[in-house]
Image 1 (spheres, helix red, strand yellow):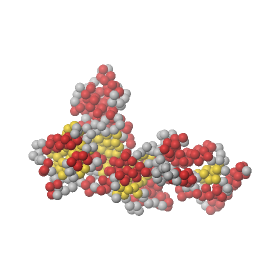
Image 2: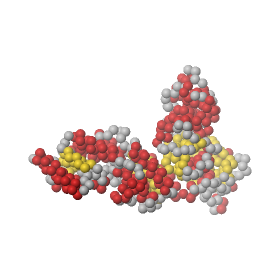
Image 3: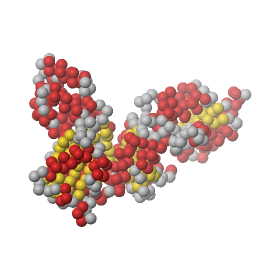
Image 4: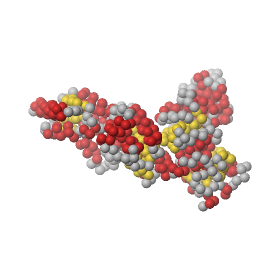
Length: 148
Length: 412
């Protein structure tokens, strides 16, 4: 199944999903498509003024361009997702897209999709970490069963 | 090459990063990103004390701290956040203050949209670049010798001759042929002083026609209006240290510049609507059968509330004023309403975009219209508005002051 994650660029969550045999929908893949496009020259991510305009599908014109630019990449991922894992209170080293308002909007849209969603909190101890990984694996295994 | 440190949030996702870099390189500067690592972000954020929710804005705080603590090398700082982001606007201003209090680096701030293009950033980058490259000149607080300042504006050309820290001659005339207007203005300024061009120690030029005149007359200083007007305003107002705001409601465009110790750090420029310019007042004066110099005293006696003015537009607003006159409003009330309309529109379009710092120094030809100065003060909640002597010659005075630090022409 295609599983969206939050933070949308968390390598650890993406790795757990791939190990369980699912497809992780991550931000890096979308950015990769953009920076490999030889037609666009707008470093660092090759986003141009057209991208925040595409973001109008998810946020109105009075919303800052940075939020709309981010949503132009993450919005389609949310639409494509068949399941989601949302990690709350994660430090930015775990994954982050820099903007609190975008975070709120992304989580809201993921919840609104009505797809199987696991919401968890970032662990603070070793025991919590082990428990969390088990929870994620169980969730992913159940997805497979439902799917299969 | 001048290194401009960029402290921002959202530029890469708004598609404007390339435009920022292009604007900097146009003026011989390069954009550098201050160094931080993940641990330092938390450390810097704790020290700074602003509880921001967005990690991109926390990163801005860390980058600012990195500059202040000497971990990153920079000659100037450009701070930018998304337009309409409240958290970004708050932190942008606090970081600006923090860097200005802790360093001597020039700073400009900007709020961008996806439509921001390099040319909108040109004057900011030019100002940053020249502030760094010509810092010694901008530090000048006293005029010395005999110097000439020319401000070749879009509507009028202003000239001053200064000697021993005083204005000794002035010239003022409409700009027609840029070079000829400057020559005529110089003649006016020299008249009665006993001096001629060969006697001057230096010449500074600013305004739209600066490059043309500066090249032709071999001026020692050719400088954009932003730095020159800021310096001229704080010099004339006797407020060279600390913070201030400079407001110039011009004949065709308006400038609002915030300054710190005489160095500009943010500004907005408007010029889209004639209803928010001196032109609106000129047309009002004509309709009232008065000279523009009579409009100010007339407005002071009037009450803007007694004349109906439902539009800021130079066409429909003037029609409203005519209707008010026909309905029995006095000329004084109509003059006051026109001044209030311009002040209110300047506030809505420009002053709201920046943090107005007292005192507000009003300059340019329109600063002589007392009714407008009063309306600006009222619109800003009664703040202190200073109109210094020679305020209409601001660019020329700034040029004459700054060029006096560049050595004597006849000694070279």
